[in-house]
Image (tube, rainbow, N blue to C red):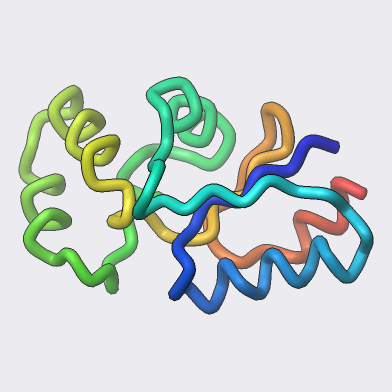
Length: 113
């Protein structure tokens, strides 16, 4: 397993996801969305695995201005803006190779073990 957890340090769900994998002795790489964000390929992979970009957006994110802007942009511009402002995505984003989940989903992660 090659687990990557994308989230922010203040996200409670990200902390719970990290704890989930620690308790099971599964190594993971933690990536802070606020500092590093996602690469173009990583975001494309998450969209392929977890669904369209609109379903990945966090309606309760702190940056409501960026979220509203993203909703009204064209598809290509929307993708670029999300790469620029990744904190508008639901957290955590957990990747395991080609598989990915968005949000706290331990029932899916258990199937990966």
